Structures are given as structure tokens and as C-alpha cells.
Image 1 (cartoon, helix red, strand yellow):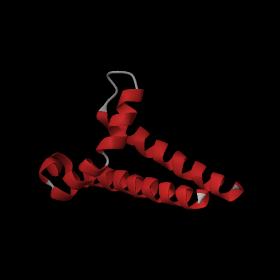
Image 2 (cartoon, rainbow, N blue to C red):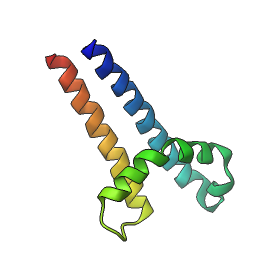
Image 3 (cartoon, rainbow, N blue to C red):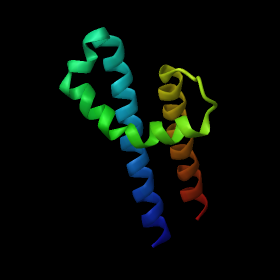
Image 4 (cartoon, helix red, strand yellow):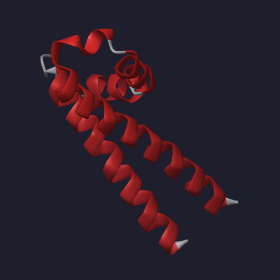
Length: 89
């Protein structure tokens, strides 16, 4: 049961990480027109929760680019940590 929960949590984190990565690529590709891009808006809705959580943990005044990057890195480290945890359980 515990292995299933770790695998399910890892899958959710993987999906969020890939959405953050795709949103970052669209940020670079679409430029200032990204606000009207429906795919970018979809990724923004999906990653809103993790980005908001990271923003609350960081000091006030950190740029949104940094929040997105730190959110992606946090998700990668969580994903790797769950992979290691799954190996030893």
C-alpha cells in the first residue's frame, strides 16, 4: 500500500514538473504574447498551486521567473527523493 502511495505521489509530482517545464519553454517561445496563448494559460492553471506555495516560502520581492525556476527545482528534488524512498522501502 505504501509503495502505491509513493508511486502515485511521484506521478503527480512528475506531471507538475513537466507542466512547469513546458510552461517555461512556452514563456521563451511565445514571448509577450504568452498571456493570450491557451496552452500557456492551461499550464499556468495547473502549476498555480505549487508556484503559490513556493512564493509563500520565499521572501517578498522575488521575481516570478525565480519562483517558477525554484518551483521546478523543488519538484525535481521531491521526485528524486521519492524515487530513493521507493528503492529502500
